[in-house]
Image (cartoon, rainbow, N blue to C red):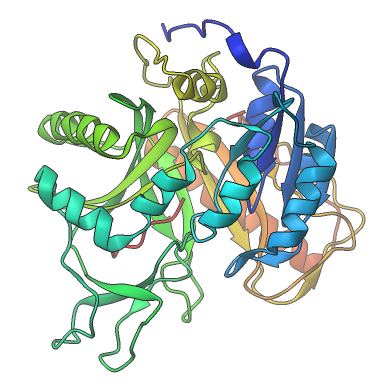
Length: 403
């Protein structure tokens, strides 16, 4: 059995301010855990609005992040600063490249997540990879100057997320705002884990894939599924390195680590120091609350154990394959999340929605998720009412990292 959560303790009276590029998954997880939620994100999707008590859609974009002043104004409206704080702050993807902005958001609110200083260290490639070297953790080669050999290198931006900032190195361009990383062989694997600043508990392993159809962004995040078979030696190695990385950086709460696994060896790509898409595949399947454990871990309390999920689960993003306007007569199936409002205009290449799936096997759940993506695309192109797809159960290769 999964260990039970031991109570809300210090946050019992607090509402939670969720801030993320897309806040739906975090807001839904917080509500499932029993918290009142207010949220600020870029999209203001229908299901976020039905979850949060108040919300604000903030200016910005996926590539550049939030408009800082717009986000701060939204936070002041949703969760006014106070001493002692009356709101907790939980953030997801989108602030890794805006660490100063994260620090300003923390003022007058109780942070449940990694400190801005921790995020800054993890997203500074010079600091992060030097720390891995000290700890004896394998990683792909990294360069901060243009490589002499242009083959088998990637160009990455500091603080980037979602894979859109990663591209093959053409052998000519200078990257003053980022770094170069050698291509590592193998399959991309993610490890979700809870940390209390000193030690870590793995939650599960997932496989990642890239979205197809965008030549300009070949490593754009496609989706995640779990479970994934990994060797016993890798599992033991991962436990040791998670404890070492947690101690080195003082990690707390729910995080994920991305690596490449080629069967004989692995190479660490990065740590995502906040909850992300892993909530969609690991939270609230067997009666536990991963969000509740995130809060607990930020207060220094880890669960005694974490049992594997009984179902295979997957999430994947549907991107617009052309400009579209969301029809007004769509009755979204329950397995579609991040639902755009009727009449919303979506640019080519932008995310439309998230598809969720669960099945008895990892192969089955990946197949089901891909079938559902095709169903969504078919209906959006046809501008017809949704057919009955059945309810379905839903969960409440290069080195680009994503979620």
